[in-house]
Image 1 (tube, rainbow, N blue to C red):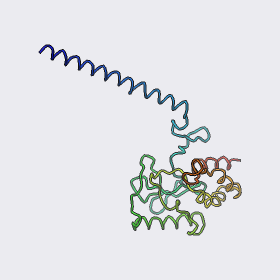
Image 2 (cartoon, rainbow, N blue to C red):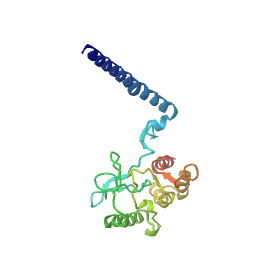
Image 3 (cartoon, rainbow, N blue to C red):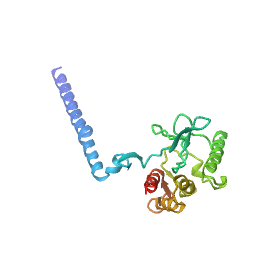
Image 4 (cartoon, one colour):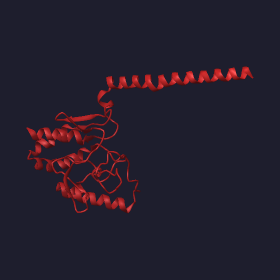
Length: 215
């Protein structure tokens, strides 16, 4: 009996020591080391890839956001600001038809490709984007019509950025050529030269646009 109690006590003691050691190593030392490496080697990425303008954080280059007026349409949806390049639609949030980014939620509408709701939404977006930019509906690229899988895509295609350049230039009183050049300067190529597609980060482009408008 005494031997059994002694063995149990030894096992409990070994278990407690292992728990303490693993708690210190995995719960304290390891997180501190990883955080230190991240801060030293990848400071910007480790802190959310923030973009600053005028000394203030205006968002993350990894997360999309909306650029709206303080006005709403007849359905209560915020109106896009013509002075800014607009992102692609977002289905993130409680209302799948709402094209505004809800940064605390990430997700797609999960509507099937043959869903009438989705098809109607796409056609409505085509009409709205064409009217907003004063172009033909046939000129509207696909990323202006469909939301991303995450609902928080920060990028648009160069085609969509170029389509918006004339409207943005007029709204800001800038020469169209300067805004078009700004777009071309912000086209990012494929990853490693062959993965993915060319893209334009909307937040970076709008920050650069604001700087251009101040000159």
